[in-house]
Image 1 (cartoon, rainbow, N blue to C red):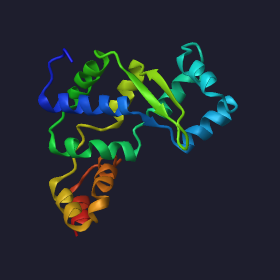
Image 2 (image 1 turned 45 degrees about the vertical axis):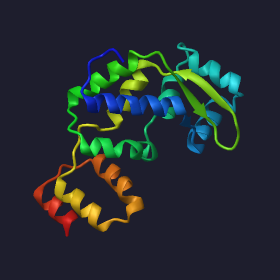
Image 3 (image 1 turned 180 degrees about the horizontal axis):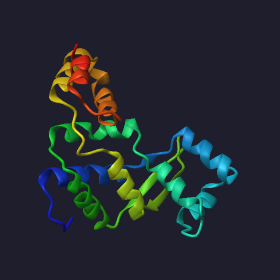
Image 4 (image 1 turned 45 degrees about the horizontal axis):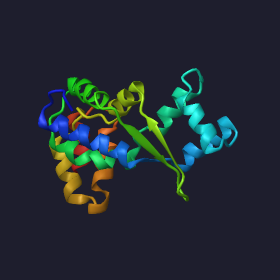
Length: 178
């Protein structure tokens, strides 16, 4: 990457690239959407849909495929929690990812089928935005989670807190810490 990044932005960029490189697992929900929207296309037909910039359904399908669900977000939680990302870092990470010419692999469950696909800029931007990299959870809540949640569930709970739709008021913080 030729773009000058902080070490944490660089690390997160590399982790995202690694995820894209290793492959995005297509969930059964996405397969159901594809089948209902596009009539159970073959891999070749699906590839044609994904590369056809004139297809009005393409963008929503790409966003669905590359939506960082909780399973994906959990892979990034340790670096997001330990770093002090700011809103402006989203643009830096996006630029770093777009400066590299890379493909992602789409992996289909239950068999060895896959597709290779260049990830378009709007998809990269939305992926980064949905990680909520700059959103922090109050340290007291994090301490309560670390102390009271089963180890295997800690990152999932932290992801849910990062994705919260409420402001952390003192009363809410106290509630979580009880």
